[in-house]
Length: 264
Image (cartoon, rainbow, N blue to C red; front, top):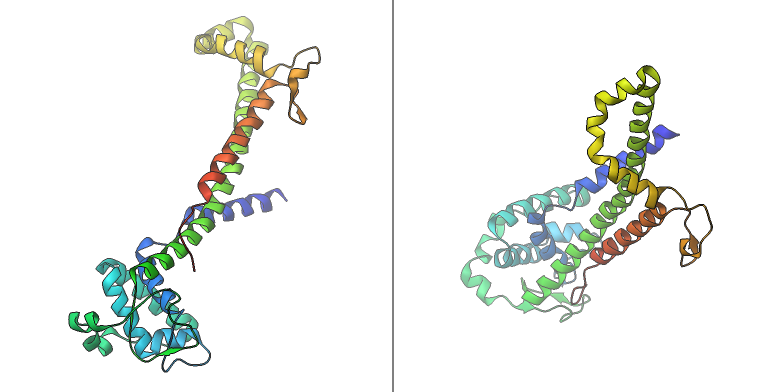
C-alpha cells in the first residue's frame, strides 16, 4: 500500500513538473481554434479535423492568420503540432503551405475579410478565406492560455500542499534523529562523548530551548488561548503549522485564478 502511494505521488509530481504546453505552439493553436468557430464552403458535415487540415479555405485562413499574429518560430512549432494532430485525430495530412501560397502574398492578405468573434454564425458557410481580427485572436489565445494555466496550476499548487506536510514530517524526523544521536552518545561514553560534539550544539542551544519552552511543550494548565476559531491546539507549534498551511492555501488559491476579459 505504501509503495502504491509513493507511485501515485511520483506520477502526480511528473504531471506537475511537465508544466504547461510549450508557448511557441500556442499562437497557431489559437488561430485554428478561432477558425473552428467558423464554417467554410466545402466543410464536411462531420469531422472537424478533416476540415481543419484539408479544407482549402480554412487551411488558407489558418496560414494567413498565423502570418499576421505568429512569429516564424511560433509557426514552425505550431504547424508541426497541427500536422501531428491531423495525422492522429483526422487520419489526414495537413495541406502544405505551398498549395495555397498564391493566396498568402501581402496583397492577398490585405484583401481578405477580417472576421470578429460572433460576427458570423457557425451555420453560415463562408465562401472565401478570411483573417480573424486582433480581438478575436486575443480572446481565443487568452481562453486557451488561461485554461492551460489552470490545469498546470492545479497540479503544481496541489503538490505544494503535499510538499508542505512532507517538510513538516522531515523536520520532525530530523529533530528526533538528532536527539537520538545525542542520547546514544550519552549512553555509550557519558559526558566525555557529549563534550566532543557539544561545540556544534552550543550556538543553537538557546534557540532550541526557547522553541521547546514557548512553542513545542504544551502548557500544564488549560487555557482559552489555545482556541482559534472552532479548533483547540495543544501546542503553539501546531497552531503555527496549521496557520502557515492556511496562508499557503489562500496564497496559491489567489494566484491560481487569472481574470481575463472575454472568453470563448
